[in-house]
Amino acid sequence: MHAHTERAPTHPGAMLREDVLPAAGLSVTEVARRLRMSRQGLHRILAEERPITPATALKLARLFGTTPDLWLNMQRARDLWEQRQAMAEDLARITPLAATA
Image 1 (cartoon, rainbow, N blue to C red):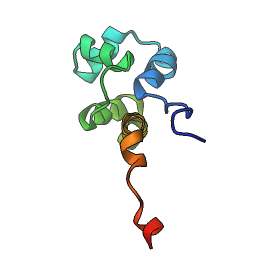
Image 2 (image 1 turned 180 degrees about the horizontal axis):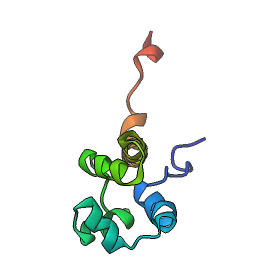
Image 3 (image 1 turned 180 degrees about the vertical axis):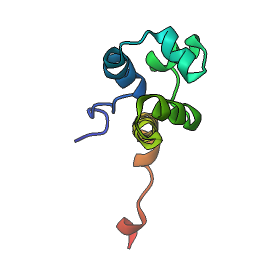
């Protein structure tokens, strides 16, 4: 499969927005209060405009009974995918060492 046709991994904010918050039955305001973060900051994560940081991953894991790795692994997959798209031409110009042997 070509990198440009590959579907982007789910942003952790989308999972929060679509699955976690509705299942918890809490408003964004209430979740932000419980996470001790600004409502605007949480909105930016939910809108997929801000990444999950290690600190936010720890807070989410504590609140929702998950692991920080769940959130960080989702973010890492998304970050790598986005970077791979942005660097596709540059990466294509790099000849792997194994190919030169």
